[in-house]
Length: 297
Image (tube, rainbow, N blue to C red; front, side, top):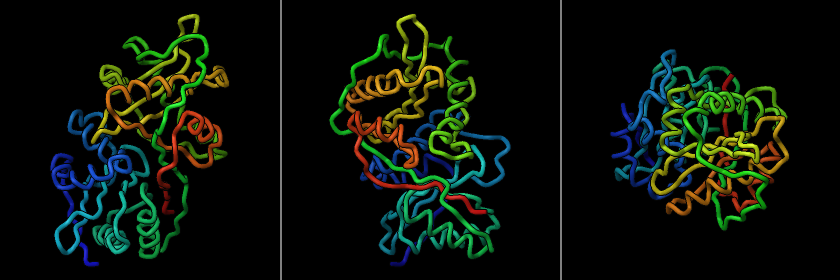
């Protein structure tokens, strides 16, 4: 099937061009749609001054002009991987070839299978490198919420005066999540600074569990709905507070609040992390599609 790649400069133009595609598969598109809307609200929350590769937004069109794929290169963390939604294999190979011709060095690519592996394989072939899947991810959507028996305390929205605590937990999440999955490499992700976390708290997107003594002992993040879908994550409990039910109770409370607002709820798990996969299955999350984070070395 003949396809063409169309690169766009900003999230606004991208949402106009790809909106129908994103709306048709809003759960699978949660990352791309969520980032685009967040950058429109607050560009400073998703930028890095030292980013070494160009930022772009992509739509793939077939010969009839219909949008049949999409992606973005916006990640504010090394190795600055583009994030791809499903697209024809021909488009994925063409993307790798185009970036190679533009001398845009691709060191990783995240998102939908098989698109990410096709891009990685073609990039490796063109550049004489190799690639490997660093993380096998699974996207889940909440079906019927199964609320667990809560531990002592309550779930509530985080307060401004807890921002430093939540920022420190957010930073620890990547390291501890990788350890639970048996990897040495920290889970890559956005580093929220104090100002951006304060904005997330003001949006009502950060939940904590407050124990019986009134101390915050866990946090759960959530994205603002995009096309009617909100994504839970990250979910973090400090090491000394684990195995007490805080994560399940907070995720359930946040999910219930989102459902009550009319949103569909989803989350990603690392397939190598048995702890998180088992927890979310008990809460009623059901696997939807597999994705991957791929490194090109």
